[in-house]
Length: 116
Image 1 (tube, rainbow, N blue to C red):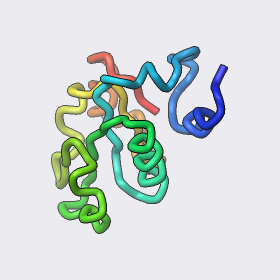
Image 2 (cartoon, rainbow, N blue to C red):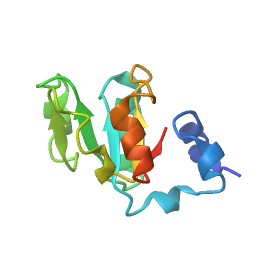
Image 3 (cartoon, rainbow, N blue to C red):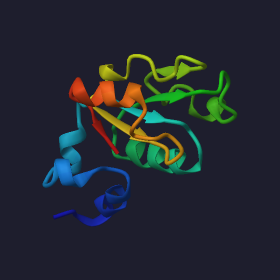
Image 4 (tube, helix red, strand yellow):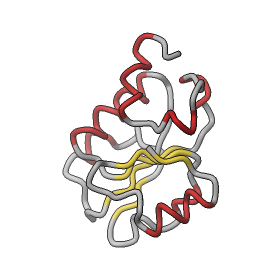
């Protein structure tokens, strides 16, 4: 069962595969936010408030809001190859515009990553 503010995460994380995991279980996980639009900005703020670190992968070479996130994001993967190497992560939070059926995401799942 989710506790308090963890309920907000339910919309982002596939709890069918991860049922019963608490927010504390994310500590030490390598996480990536695919895209830094409105939804993932809110998620990023939430994760940071909980003391959790993450990387940002975005197809844009220069993310418009990058300046306000500098020093708070563990790693930036920007540009045409932003989906390369996703198997480096344990948990990938994708924006709704990125299909979970993309080959790069499928490969990351086969390597053990969990997708939102």
